[in-house]
Amino acid sequence: MNRSVTIGTRGSELALWQASFVKQQLAHHFPDIEVNLKIIKTTGDTIQNRSLVGLGKGVFTKEIEIALLNGDIDLAVHSLKDLPTELPEGLCIVAIPTREDPRDVLITSTGFPLEDLLHGAKIGTTSPRRKAQLLHLRPDLQVVDVRGNVDTRIRKLEETDLDGIILAAAGIKRLLKEEVITQFFEIEQMVPAVGQGALAIEAREGDTNIENLLVPLNDFTTVAEITAERTVLESLGGGCQVPIGAYAEHIEGELSLIGTVCHPEGRVRIVESAAGMLDDAQHLGKIVAKKLRNSGANELLKALSDVE
Image (cartoon, rainbow, N blue to C red; front, side):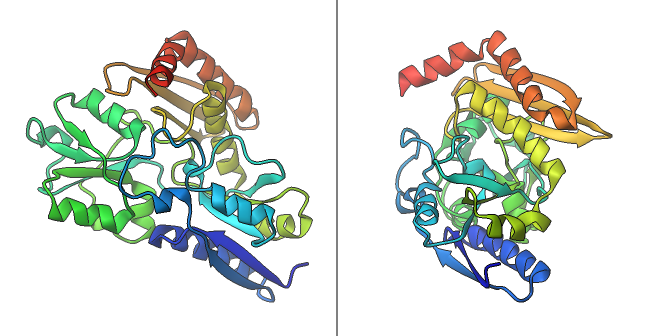
């Protein structure tokens, strides 16, 4: 078994928290192993002055995966929602720890919730999924791109003319900044990104030493939930830059899955759901994807690809 392990991670405060969490878990289960972090800058980190839409998949993961394939690191820790459904040949997701809160949150400068914001209020988000669902709820709002880590976005809210920003609850909670949250969106209001709130630990295929180390970190219920969600995304051919959302939850022995595809400006929002057994997650994802397609998702996605 390895005597030392190097974890590849992005350099943001949240990414370092996530990698440090995995490091602490490994140290707890295997105290004799030295665990190190290696910060790797990705395309998404480098491009800060414009939207990432149109740059393709893996903008926050590609460089880390190259380091993993080259043997510069032993494993990689990602926000699972950033990880494309199709991984590079030779890599695989080895473990998914228990998921944090999957919901999106609204943070406003006035402390007013969504329904009380003034007509035409300006909300910042770079996510096409969030923008589409927000405009479906409030077509009068202005939605503008706001890039940067959690602290940067909160600072932009305080220092610019923004009335609010939308972020993932998981990141806020992990960084112990929950007091800034104005409102949690319910799942049905704003269906989360696939894998939101979960971490993906990626390694080289066939690296049994690393696989054995990560067994205690893997949460099988979360794995089933994520499998259902990622199957929806894969079946629809979308990525994190497409207004698609999916969320699965294990409730009393049953896996419940909701999925959505939206018009980019929120004019149409298709929502479908289904429920099944925990060990039938992939089939459940295909069912919801088929229901979405039958309800018009193909036309929406085609229209979006034609625009791009």
